[in-house]
Amino acid sequence: MVGSTQKFRAYELTDNGFSIKLDRNLYAREAVMKALYRFHDKYIISYETDGAFIHVFFETNAKIESIEHEISGIMKELAFQMIRLDTARRTRGIRELLVARSLYATCIEPERDVPEHDEAEAKSGWREDQSHIFASWSEE
Image (cartoon, rainbow, N blue to C red; front, side, top):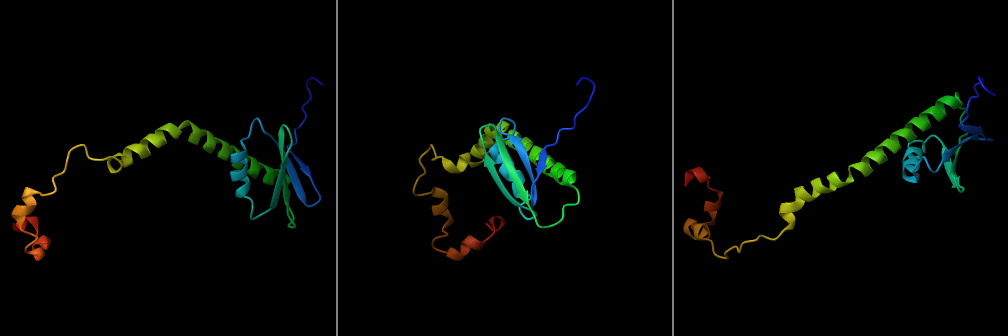
């Protein structure tokens, strides 16, 4: 029908709640799981997959005031988690580089040989007078 609009409904009502159908080509499983976790205290959530879709079932004993409002909140969280996952994937290299650079000095062996006996330490005589170690440098 040209000219008519048909409202797409992203959910189906069930006996104790509702279900949504997510395209596996659009939504990563990791993002779906993180988004669903935000609603685990409000609903009993289960899911099953078939070839192309993830079917998520939300069950509750409480009365749902507005299904559309609930679905909107779930889909917003899902979009947020997809953006977060995409950002994490795109910035993985730089994050790994930052961590590597911050730990670099602690992970490498010194290139020069460190003498076992230090001349400055021998001159200070702190081993003979161990209370001297607590003296301020400015007092020397």
